[in-house]
Image 1 (spheres, rainbow, N blue to C red):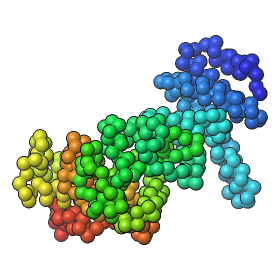
Image 2 (image 1 turned 45 degrees about the vertical axis):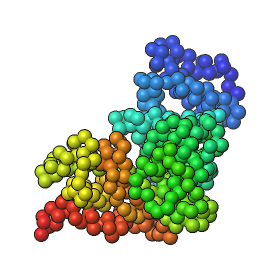
Image 3 (image 1 turned 180 degrees about the horizontal axis):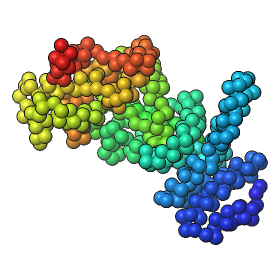
Length: 439
């Protein structure tokens, strides 16, 4: 094992000059270099612990400086990459390919693997990616660091390492508190609310990783109902009566939350939904429908932006700007028809880089669901009215169709939607305008 004296000598020059933040950065970098030069497993683990401890003290300018050094000093050598690429181009042998693969892999990946040897190393690297991602858009030179972390974490957090666990009232309080903290779709209003979400006619499941035993990776909340729910408030009411789940014919996935920002971009939802549906089907053989009741978070924003271009929508926008505008609508009001049609159009036809603009739609369609039904005033909470005028959508997961739907979306970004939703979209003002332009 490297002695404390060795470590002190390693970063002694850094300690003599510069600000305290500079010294902390240099110390951390020195320990990272020492970790890469170490060959013994025991001594390597000891240095990894010291490096992670030093890294944990970095913040602000010191943290940014550390990421700059990771990008600059731990990247592949361009000259070595060019030589190896030329050798492979001239002679595409297996040995030249292996050499090319070796030189294009940055030292950072090996550094991260060795940091992972320390207790808590995996959690620290997940947290590192979270901290990195907060400024990645402004610090494009860090893209290689993010790519290396994503590559390694994708391997370490693949489905084979994850365990599905049911969360109930007997689950340790530490984990229950994490659920309350992470819930991102429908905020949990205290312990009474959480307890209702874990009653016998409800289910909650989460993926866990052995390196983060008390940290849910992603969790899903399910209501066991008769028929497909079209309003979320009854599902969230902590005072609602508990019903016998054996009579349910539908499982409603009403909230899915990714808990770890450092694992953003790594797909877990597809595996989670499929396994939960299969497990629930075995527990409750009468379940015939597996569906979501999902928010449409970008609809109001898109509608406001679109109205600036299409003056025909100005009256509708004025209506929505009124306080509690929806409470005094007459039955069959035109505003309801227009909103439903425009929302169906938004979900099916408004794109972001060839995919649906709505992030929730991308998630469920990518997982193989079908866009089934649009629901009027399904979420009348302040958040629900602000982001989607109270509208929500049911996505249906038919186990026999999931793979086919997924392939259609993955290859062609095809939006699988019910005939009713497609008809709504075709009746929207924007669809009629486009049809007129085409004619």
